[in-house]
Every structure is written in structure tokens, then in C-alpha cells.
Amino acid sequence: MAKAGLRTVFVTVGTTQFDDLVTEVTKLETVQLLSGCGYSKIVVQFGSGTIPKIKHRAVSFFDFKSSLENDMRAADLIISHAGAGSILEAVRHRKSKLIVVVNEKLLDNHQLELARAMDSNGYAACTTVEKLAETIQRVQDEVFVPFPEQDKSKFPEVLNNILGWR
Image (cartoon, rainbow, N blue to C red; front, side, top):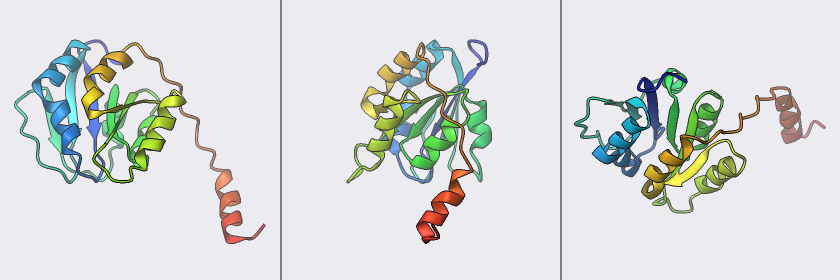
């Protein structure tokens, strides 16, 4: 991790709209909390949502990029929506702490199960928008379990089973 005061937070909502999360991380109280925890830069990817009305020099934002890899790699803390792709991309970087924020407004929220599993296995912290500030404070001293490396040898086996070749 970078030295105190030089750390970066990356916030992503993927391709979705999750304005409640974007609003929460860009409000003055949250920016001050993150600053107090030693984060000097907050990068927000707001997806298909509303362009944030930001008045903090520590905060920058964008809607989409072809890849979020560099942003995730540069982050010391990732705050992500509970989309499977975003979560897996974040935990594979291993150096960043990950907070997964569940969108409680989604009907039939399939993301909740994945977020809770990541939390219960120690890979990330699962929270809601309302409890984000509390979770940010809690994870500062928390050590997460490194996510297992991808076992690429399993894919042919799974594909063979799907196609009925075994």
C-alpha cells in the first residue's frame, strides 16, 4: 500500500446505474471520512447513472472505459457494486481492500448472495449504502483473505461436461 495520505479509493458501479452509491461516496462526510483514513484520491466510475455533482478536488469521475484494470490496480481500497464481474476483477488484484455494496433497490437481488459469500469467506466486506461509512472505518484494520488463483485447467473439464463428451 502507498504511504498514508497518498492512497487511492476506486469506486465502480460497472455498466449499471447505482446513483445512491455514487452520491454516498461523493458527499462531503464520506470524502472527509476517507481523507481521515489516509485516502487522498477518490476515482468514481458512475456507469450509466447520473453524472455526479462533485465539489471536492480529491474526487474525479468517469462513466465508462474499455478496461478498469489500471484503476483497480492503482487503488488501495475498491468500493464496488455487487456485480459478479466487478467483484471478481477486484479480488484478483489482491493488494486492494474490497467493499461490496449491495443495491437494495434491485428486485430479486441475486447479487446479495455473492456479496455475502465473499464476506463470509473473508475476501471482501459486504455492506449497504446506509452502512458504507461504518464499513469503511471497520475495514481499515481488517486483513482480507487472498482470493484463490484461477485454475484454468478446470475449463476444459467443465466444457466437456456441458457438451456431454464425458
